[in-house]
Image (spheres, one colour):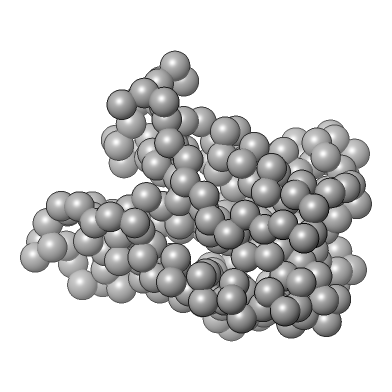
Length: 237
């Protein structure tokens, strides 16, 4: 499918998976709006995106704050004129034993990873329904397929993302809207590097660009086809 001149929104788009996806989109001629909370990084990424000759800009808001999301998405649509693609990428993680993790940390992970995705999708979906066409890519994780020790909050949030995505997919297929749920294993993103989950060795560890390539592949399928879900793993154990 031709993607040039499409309009995309990417949450958490200033770094890591979001930035790699934004760059991949810009290379294909897709106009991109990225969101985040660090204005300096947002500015840097937008400047890079503009070098590909596309319309690119940013909005600052916390996806876990519904009032901020409402204003931010309204501003984005006004600037883009419309929207064709939403990538729900913004997310946070923290790891530790169940009884040792602060309740506030648990709540923040659920609020950002689950409610944040819900808030943004709720504000964008009506535009896609009106057009009777669109794509929503929700970033989950292999942690949402299988739980493990010391990742209970993050895993719970990603299980919820998968359930939300699969339910919505079956609800809006009639509107020609494709919902793609992606479950990558460890990728050398800013978050995983900061948490010490990986050393980021490009010879062994998945890179953000690999993930962006998967997203593009799903979008380029003809409209009659939908990549409902896909996992991405490194070839190295």
